[in-house]
Image (tube, rainbow, N blue to C red; front, side, top):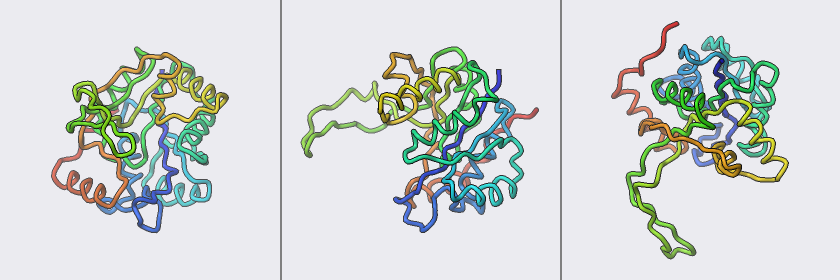
Length: 238
């Protein structure tokens, strides 16, 4: 069995308001997506990496990220689709000739550069034994359900988890879930939701509150603070 990391990095990043796609903004002197890729490049538990990029940016990604930082595990840079879900299925199809149904695919946001290695390892182990693994952290705040600005429900906080990535699945299961969603015209909120609609059981893996998705300028400041405050996460050695 091998493990493949699929890194969607095709978002436009409009909320960042930076004039360029957020995955290429610098974090501690290096593009955000390069930090993300470095984690999977140095992890002994990951064999291959596929990146999903806007088609027009593939040459830039290849030259200024993959080649510049020497990411030898990158097998392909795949054109993205209209929505994230379309991008992911493009990536799954691109790896079809090099993976088996029981191989594990880690789907991880290109702009989550601070995921700890133990979380990745736990997600792989869980996906190997179950239908899927969802990295998540318990909700800290009380969550309200509201319609037209009026609160209608307060779900018990102990039942609520904040989804992160990676989300991990065996290739055959997640490829089938994506293909069926496309055939049905269904657009889910994340990859795990595509399994949930088919009655599959997705198991939670405890995540890390530092594993933030960099979406706004405030997130970038927070990520820089985490990098300054904490020593680098331990890396696997071959």
